[in-house]
Length: 415
Ligand SMILES: Cc1ncc(COP(=O)(O)O)c(C=O)c1O
Image (tube, protein in one colour):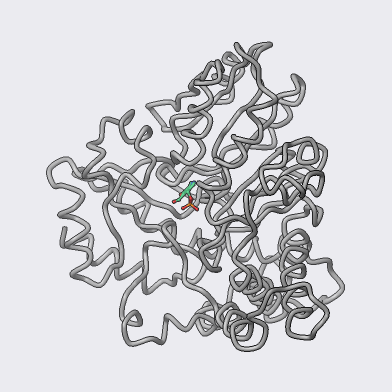
């Protein structure tokens, strides 16, 4: 069997997630993954184990405490390996919104009156509001708008917005509404010619394949771990050379102990340790599909990413095709996933029915979804969509299967 022929063993995948066996959720097709994913049993086991055995203050010499501390460090180290970062380039916070707020607060000392920050109108508000707030410090905010014909952010438009005063570009790797993948590598290259810092929001990208942050070249990158099969935490990657020059936002006496002093407090210990379960799940997934055990964690992740994106194309493309054909429904973003150019995060709205009505109908057919603006309200506003009613979003991930696809197509016929 050649590598290209290896397909994701979806039954194996689903057997790892207890939610697919639980009486409450087992009969539902879950289409709300962009809001938060189910967790594999490894994560639940790690969390339970921590609570039973090591739920004490970490980093003392007695065994329960020592093991707690070791596991907290291990979780960070494993995630650093998975995304190609150094251990001291990873910060764990409560959410992406919190991480980006903390980061903007830390970076503001590096900006002077008249400096410019570029934000988009395609992003989730988490990567817009913290930067827009810097206006109070005399910073000018420049908006990079997406194209209304195809809903894409054009790099040629960005080029026109960059000036000698631009200091930061905050841009999503993948919009949680449009679904398209933005070329952060190209954006970073362009920005770095002018010493501009790039902040990438990977929340809607990472669930479909962990990124190689060094390859992307971004200065900061963040994603929500509760959408990448973990507990309610979020990861912030930052380049060491920038992180070490950021101010201490923690206790005064901790000065100089970067990068942990950017966060005003520490992470949730038990949830941090449960992240080891995400690593274990991906390691198991790799071992289930591939024979070569000599690869690095990063190389294994890249192989799994390919398996996942091939599977996601198969399950999501029929839905995109169907929605594109329906004259009464408006599909947002690309009409087909090809070569990972789009996430299986599919948003649409109707010409004659409210999004709420549609999502309620879908719920009747056991399609777990909802209508909302999903906090990308600038994106919806620009598209002329009522931000209260929002869009209906069908967001899939690698554990969705073709039955889910069939179920949603059948339910959409009833809409
Ligand atoms: C693209 C995107 N960015 C940022 C966020 C904010 O993440 P959090 O809920 O961790 O603050 C979300 C949440 O839905 C999102 O979809």
